[in-house]
Image 1 (cartoon, rainbow, N blue to C red):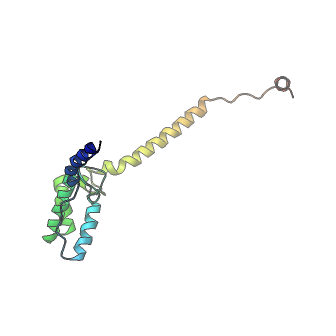
Image 2: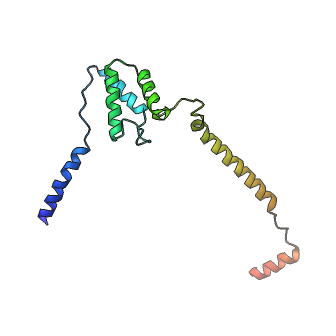
Image 3: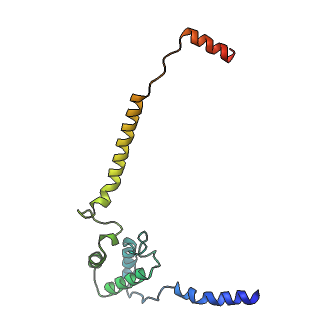
Length: 152
């Protein structure tokens, strides 16, 4: 049993090294590091789709972070970098895509769905109110019979 656990431990060693990030060369200026961190939180990982570049562990996300780091060292602005990435990956790479004709459905679909649901609810309640009848009041004879049945 002890030998088996040692063998399993050694089998896991190669997997541990795979999960580590590649070492990066630090920025020379502190404001570049803040700018880098702010930028990678505004960009989406195209593999994970619901994570920022800062949160993603995907290899492509690491490559994109390295690319951004290189472009910042080359003196490019945030706008130039985001333009480059949107040209390459589309507006999907931005966590807050701009309102354009191509992205209008992303912005308007939630409001359209809520409006459709409210209209459906209004029509359902209206139809239900029109088709449901309220029972007529009981006559005195029926009221006496009911009291008799209930034992009052």
